[in-house]
Image (cartoon, rainbow, N blue to C red; front, side, top):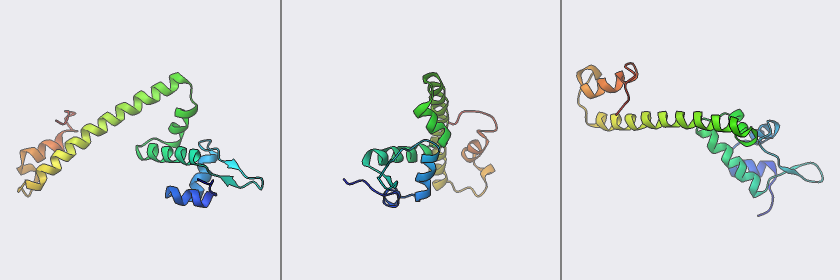
Length: 132
């Protein structure tokens, strides 16, 4: 595959060119430059960009993504442990929400208070009780 200019690379990634420029300015991407100074995106740089996009979609900030790449080992381990704990909390909430929505599809009560299962779901965070 031939290297791409910034506009083509952005289109291939489904983002705007200014996003790639920003990622470069904060040290996340380092595309090579042509003799005339234009950015050149090869498949490796596109893979790094795809990784950044995925990590952003999971809730990591650009600062956190940069830290994963350049931070000291101990700092990276702390960030990884914290993010994994957040992800586990999200998984628990998403599973509970999925069960609630499945229940809600069959629930015939008009008001949440009339249904014990609906009420349990809405009160779970208030009581700090884990959602089953």
